[in-house]
Every structure is written in structure tokens, then in C-alpha cells.
Length: 210
Image (tube, rainbow, N blue to C red; front, side):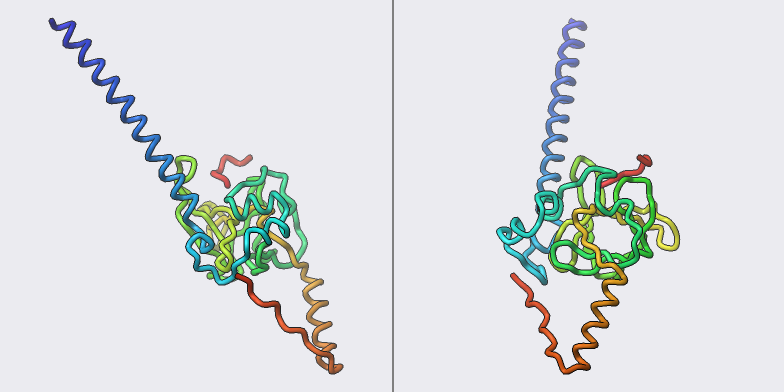
């Protein structure tokens, strides 16, 4: 009788263990699904700048679209700006909003472009990301909701922050190019040229990485 009780108890425990694992996996899948729909103003329909998906598919490369619109991740050490050292400003590849200055870029050894400070505090939106069964902080463009990467608390002084960003989410404006454009605009103004109107807004380091 004792053997029967022990056997029955063992079967019950195994059943509960299997049930709990299934429950856990279901909850994780639910969190992952929720995370896929949260974290950007694009999903909440509160973007300041909105583009149609048809336009974006035409304008962006497949990788840029996958990363910015589907929260994808480019391969480590393969991005255009991973080892980029030119002076200038990094902007959102979707809407052109400035997000980082070259002075704040550093080599984290992670395989993705890393920055320790934003160009402006409100340039990026932050959202909890529970995908892949872990907790991270997603960073998105505050203007158009494009996925940029993730934020970690293991960066250098003075901020201690590491914005781990996909190259595919970024465009770059060289400092010399920006200065030249500014001088050209000033020259046109002085010469009586017509100033064009702005375009209208349309609706392996051991660290945790992207």
C-alpha cells in the first residue's frame, strides 16, 4: 500500500511539474506577444510623424524595415556604423530625427554601435521589453516610433548608460556636410534666393545585447 501511495504521489508531482512548465511557457509567450505590440508610439497611434507601411517598404532596405518596424536585430559586428568614427550626428533612418552625437559614441565590444548619452533627453522613448524571456529596456524614436535598440546600465562615465543601437536604425550626417549646408543656406538668404519650406510631416563582451 505504501508503495502505491508513493507511486501515486510521484505521478501527481510529475503532472503538476508539467502543468507548471506549460503555464510558465504560456505566460512567457503572452508577454512576448504583448511586448511586440508595445513600446513605440507607432503602435499607440500617438506618433508625431507617421508614414504608411507601403511608403516605408519602398524607402527602406529590407533590413532597415525589419529592424525599425518589426523590432528586428541586425547581426553583431556587421552593421554599417559599428566601427564608424566620423564626426557628426546620428539620426533616425525613418524620420531623420537627431538621436546621438558622435562624441558620445564608444566601443563597447558588443558588436553594435553604442552611445552613452542622447542628443536630447526626449529624443528616444523607453519601454519595458519582456521578449525572449528576459527583461530589457527598448529604445524607440520618440517622433516616429521606429525601433532603435536597447538601453543598459553598464556604460562608461559620466552617465553609466549604454544605448545599444542597430546600425540599420540610423542614418548619419557628417559635421562638415552639415556646416556646408548651413553656409549654403545663409548664402542664398543673403543673395535674395528663395528659401525652401521644410517638408511637411506625413501621417563578444559577455554583456546582454540587442
